Length: 516
Ligand code: HXC
Image (cartoon, rainbow, N blue to C red; front, side):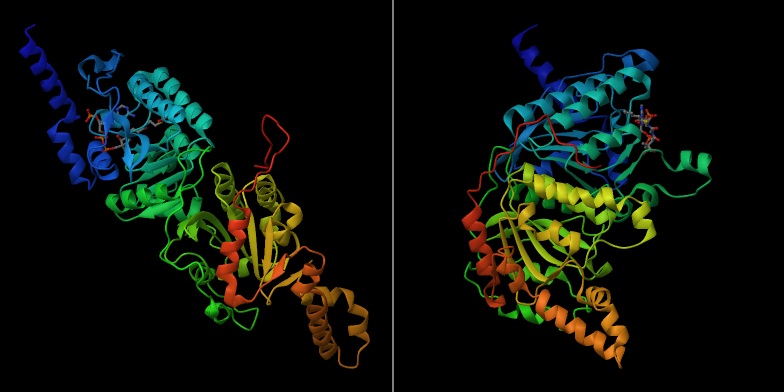
């Protein structure tokens, strides 16, 4: 072949490759309101940074007419590029080729990208848009999925892994996303389920749409499978870029430190105005977060799921930290099964990636109830204790108001490993609330009194004043300092700075056995 012809063959091949499944199928994709695999990569990566890996991979199987359906790339585009200058590896499934279905060679391509991300220590992003296992390839497809799951698992805790669901993701295909750290979904674009509406209708008789069953809203607020919800693909990618900018590339690096426009010596005089005088009245802990941490820096994780805890990445004096806050707006901030799962998984991500943990505490305890007990609150609640005790990153707590019982231990106990525990003067620390405590220990006195209710109120006030005030715990050294609310931001930044070099070793072991 003449040189010129060889170059022409390359160019023709590339042009065809860029078309994916062809112009008609791209049009169908656009009509569904979806971008193509390559358009998605383009809006995510820094301009011109994409380096494609193995673009000529193609199907080897020949059954059921696959020999006539050979497409370069085999239904996925993969490679490396930069996000805000940070190297990442990624793949993006191409629905225009055999519905993005995954067979042997697509899996090979994906696993190659996963392994390169792991070896280079870069974040990994998977963009899913696929009909699932390529039916014609049978066992080859299942084998391919298994290899992907294994690579996801090996990479877990070494590099951050993100899944962007931008189309169907059905059957066993959902398990790769579930193993990754964060799942992002877009309304009316993303669907994720083990069995779809047709199978459910046939088996259980339940009638439900794709969106209601496995859309962004269902997974971000009901199942807790997904972490972030958006209205458009562009919005989703913009957020992912911001999230990646907060995180280290791998478990050997520290999170990036940025210049903050919010002064580190800003006083927080308004903090007490956010806290109602009546301890039974709720408030939004997010207001505390925006007052204490760098302004507008919170990236909340699972905002609509288990809202009785707020978790997310936030900046404190320009450093990324993971905030773990009780939210009195829901269930009076009592910890339950779902919030325990949500918090524990987030805390373990922080610890794996060297992100300090800051807890904001106002918690009456674990949620009472038969459903909670029989649902396994013991096992689920233990996850938070385990995650905090296991974490060797700097751990700082601020007690705003209530810190009762087992929830006190989870949120701010020095014995569990918090490095610095600060309390506002409004903190109430105890085995339980003053009312419950007074009812038990002064039961006889109250019963014998001329006016039992008056006596009860006096005993509650006495107990609160004498036993639950933060100076008692501070007297034992279990609270490091009781601080003036006006200097809360300053104190928190200084607490972080003084602990940022922290190193803590643990006995070597294969791995622990967190209660699941
Ligand atoms: C082979 C597939 C495919 C698949 C879609 N296609 N899914 N080909 N294997 N799994 C093909 C279609 O035949 C079609 O090809 C093209 O992709 C586009 O699909 P459409 O059906 O026209 O698109 P749409 O109407 O948008 O519907 C999308 C869909 C539907 C809802 C995803 O295609 C669908 O239900 N597919 C099957 C889903 C499924 O059951 N997958 C297996 C799940 S079990 P032509 O050439 O006709 O246009 C699983 C197990 C994994 O994944 C286990 C791992 C452990």
